[in-house]
Amino acid sequence: MTPALAPSRATRIASIVALSFTLAGVTAHAASGASDEADLSALLKRQTQAFSEAGQRGDAATIDRLLDPDVVFTNETGAIATKKDLVDGASPPPPGAPKREIEVTHWALRRQGDVATATFIDQLTQHFQAQTLVVRFQSTETWARRPDGWKMIASHTMNVQTPPPAVTLSPAELDAYVGVYQVDPTYVVTIARGGEGLTASANGGPSTPLKVEIRDVLFTDAAPNVRKLFQRDRTGRVIGYINRRDGVDLVFRKMS
Image (tube, rainbow, N blue to C red):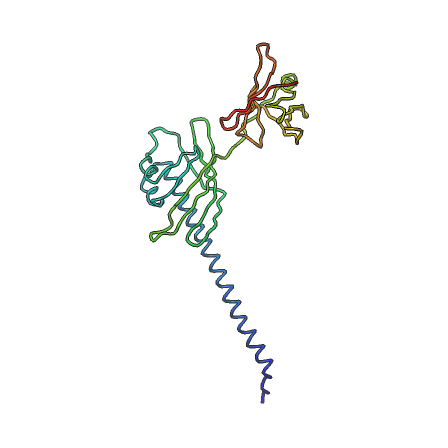
């Protein structure tokens, strides 16, 4: 005859069994949630790819299907468009236009209930007769769950900046840029030789390598949207430069 368990031991065993069922339920729920998140991410990536391709081929029907009526769309030029603007503006490329391919890369999705925000890069490849052009666009897009599926409610796109190819100048040509430049006494930039190239530092701060795009046009890899456009007098002597960032100029005079 098996002796009865003491009440304290029976209670402990019952508690362990109940906890095991609870943990199993939590684990199953977590696994289900992770699966749901992965499924949604895959769905919205497919829809994003479809939208990007539709934009390239002028597919108004697909654009109309994927956009919410009140979508706010900002493209890489800063222009803001409505759904009507995008649908009405969709048109197939002209005959003989270069072949285009677009691919959604660097995909990531974050969900907050019935809203999900994606970040990704669209890589657009254009094939000409003898050249291939590749440009990339960084986007953040927000989707919302509607009765008829997930619809895009907001999009913001910007160009992915890429440094241009650099050229090599002679030591004498590089020496011409060396000196101290200023906007006023509060903002001074020193350009110096560094190894076989040039460096620039602002107000005594860290030095940054400068590269040459073409003669008298310099840039840094860290800020490919900025150019230093050097100015010369009638004798060819460097007298200053224009710091041009996204079309906005700041003029520096060479002090020494």
